[in-house]
Amino acid sequence: MSNPVPELSDSRPDAAITVARAEADHPHSAVVTFGADRPLTLDAGTDLSPFQIAYQTYGTLNAARSNAVLLCHALTGDQHAANINPVTGKPGWWETMVGPGKPIDTERFFVIASNVLGGCMGTTGPSSLNPLTGQPYGLDLPVLTIRDMVRAQSMLIDHLGIERLLAVVGGSMGGMQVLQWAASYPERVFAAMPIATGARHSAQNIAYHEVGRQAIMADPDWRGGRYLNEGTSPRRGLSVARMAAHITYMSDSSLHRKFGRRLQDRDGHTFSFDADFQVESYLRYQGEAFVGRFDANSYLYVTRAMDYFDLAADYGGVLANAFKGTKTRFCLVSFTSDWLFPTADSRAVVHALNAAGAPVSFAEVESDKGHDAFLLEEPELFAITRGFLDSAARATGVA
Amino acid sequence: MMSPREKLAHDLTMREAARAASGTRVDLLLIAQMVTPGSRVLDVGSGDGELLELLATTRGCDARGIELSREGVNAGVARGLAIIQGDADIDLADYPDDSFDYVILSQTIQATRRPKWVLEQMLRVGRRAIISFPNFGFWRMRMDLLLNGRMPSTDNLPYSWHDTPNIHFCTIRDFVALVDEVGARIESAAALDASGHPVRFKMPWWVWNLLGEQAVFLLTRKG
Image 1 (tube, each protein chain N blue to C red):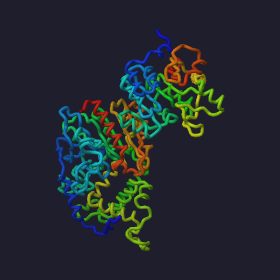
Image 2: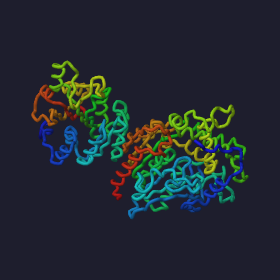
Image 3: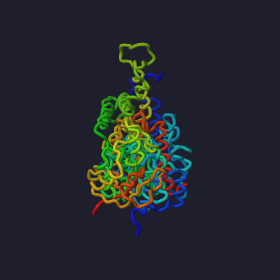
Image 4: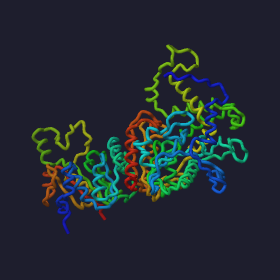
């Protein structure tokens, strides 16, 4: 590995951050704005209005409007699933899965990906301008939930004139949204594919998120959430948050395979706190790269939304009740080495779906890549996704 | 009104015969014939989904599967079938009462840890249960043990005794005794001979137990 060891002491926003900030209000995406006549009622008990959603689409909506597939992104994802990301200049986060001839085939399906509420890539979030003050929302934005995100997405789907989605697909936090879609709008979801996810965030996962949030809030440059107003950037805190989280996305064996105990461009230990080990250098690089594309307050809001997610709690504590009488067909996938959303989490959802009599498939894919496996080259996941979407298309007469 | 055994003596339809020629297992065809078209079916130990596909395409069933092997599940799901990765010995407990019209266990009961419990669960989850299994009372098995003094192995059961998924073999008569023990009723039954054809004549159990290489039973709850 020859990643540059980044300089973490500079608190000034750099050029990349400036580009990222511009995306918050004027993204390189289609945008739909919902005005005062169409407020979004939030679980926090207030209305959000006006607000906007930034989204990308791929492929063509057919005449019957029956071939739409909604992708839901994970914690730090965005709407740029299958195109070059305007901030990083890198391929979209699901280029391996989405595209012409790929498992989510854009020659066949009309694929929609939107930035989540609370995000920082053009959908209203803490870095968006608050129309009341002309300043970024910061912590004045109400705390959001997965259900709020899905409610907002449903307004986007209305706006696109789509009655029923052929499929809703997503991994991790995206999978939570898929489950919420199926629970909130069962008649609008023909097929649901939650990957590497669970019906609630575990205590361990909440704990990891709290470490990340505390790292951000402990950074003096966070300025009580007002860093955008004050021209600083809590890059050290956000970077540490990302480093901690990144470990949870990998597995012990994948870290070992990638780095082992190998040293970074040196022959021996330096007897200092430099990044002697490749794994340290790698994490520092990941942290620093993240700072250039993600907003610290968005990280607080979106992790909080995941923590609050407990689908059964909204249905009297019985998960099966969330899916009572559903006609939606489900396909769940987990990965053997994922310890963030282990197979048991998926299985709990499968049991609830069985109890509700829902048609459900479930496969555990053998992989040593940890939670991140859903974003990576996993031929079995691709085959399952292709087969599941193909059977949904056949059942609904989509060519 | 035909007797249950006569019902099973039906000739295979042309379509099914064509499938048999193309390699579908005869016991699966027999099972498919036992299932009322359009019913809800759970296939426990569904493999790569061969029976599920047969039930969906020829009987119009809402057919779902449970399969232990990851390869089997992934292959089936990739073919668009509703299959769950799971273990009959554990996961049947999670299904509500009466959630299926039929619960099927084909060539799997001998590989379960708790055959009696599995049978009871099948009859709880489904209104009917269909079980097919290799008959350890088959004359060739007996001959093998009698003449060679070795644990029998056949083309259908090629495993050696120390390396086999099959831990609970039984004979047709053993199975009939178990059915009695769990308080179920035999609605119909068939034995298949070594060439995979149903033993067509109504005969006492001991004859089937000798001539049948495998057996297929359709059970219902008593009362």
